[in-house]
Image 1 (cartoon, one colour):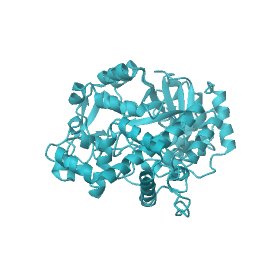
Image 2 (cartoon, one colour; image 1 turned 90 degrees about the vertical axis):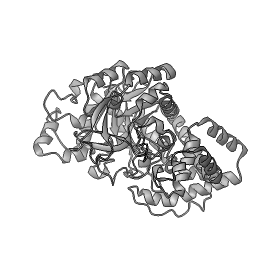
Image 3 (cartoon, rainbow, N blue to C red; image 1 turned 90 degrees about the horizontal axis):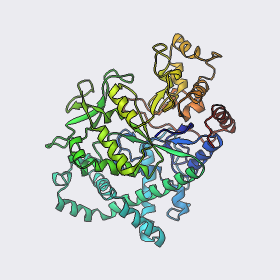
Image 4 (tube, rainbow, N blue to C red; image 1 turned 180 degrees about the vertical axis):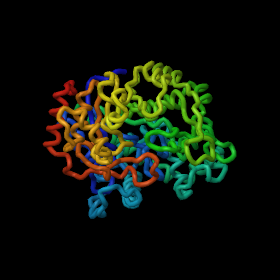
Length: 498
């Protein structure tokens, strides 16, 4: 599905300013949409929005379908009468970088208070909408019970729970559903509020001409509602419930030992026998929330790197073919034309390219990869084709300023000599201009690069378990001058179809 010539900004909602320690779906999110409009952008690319666990990674969520309650705006709950002004008075002096533990400690009790008020004194119209949401979200029952069970097990992974619960014995599950009714209601309420607030924000963006580009990780976390509820769809050890085969990638640009993600590998034979019904549900849930989808680790749909249980690095794995063609044909049959962007980075074979091109999915080009290896480097702009998406860098890269500063003088020169007026004074704007001027139909810039920030503002370092995902920008950082500059470049290079 080729896309028109447009551009946009990459920013996870957690990176928005707020007074409660983490970005949310409140006023600042709407102001960011306004900044996109003023800058003549058409795309807001987000990362996954699911509920995060250990490590705080949006790529390791407790559910592939649910939203992160920490993104719920407390001010919006106050506007609904579910929290009072006193409830939100005198918030702690949170650091600019997200301290997830502190945010959870402060924010979750307030969300519980809002839920209690909603349950005790429900607005009839709102409660009717809540019940309709619960009935329509067919993944919600499993997720709410899963989260309630995690709480009584002090956060322990599901395979360590008592066997009758871990294995979902009907009598034991029915008993827990009754015993944990209040806790289950709470988690359903959180998902309802998240969905309401996200839907309102997306509608505002769409009405302003902004499309939301969502992110679908190919794998789900082992400690997730989906793996617990549907173990038959994954390669698990039947005795322990641990992944029998783990996902990852072999050694590459990011890591000499590869990346061992630890997610369980799919049982593709079982999924295909059921016409990929679980994948149909997952894509439909995603398409209800976003306009476009970037599939993370697209190559895993052609062949995936499978690492045996017990390995501590991703070195000793093997490539196994996956039924990607059959999956996407079924998706086309059931859901129609697919607004998908393929993350085709890393070790890409002709077979992966053929799968991408069979469905006309745009691939990705990263400018930070372009300036080493000579004139045949496929990431140099003169090698691009229109049906691609160009980035200065992604959430997994250093910021452009940080990347450039980490290069040797000779390596810096290999970058600056590419430009007609060689300089390193504003390398971030040089790469933004280069991306916008390319033939790629889409050009996406992380907000850190527009702000000209260094390595301290990096979002994620692959292979590093801690100190990721915490970056936020300060209120007032988005200036009119910045917007004017981005709008001018966007217009010069024809990325304003309006």
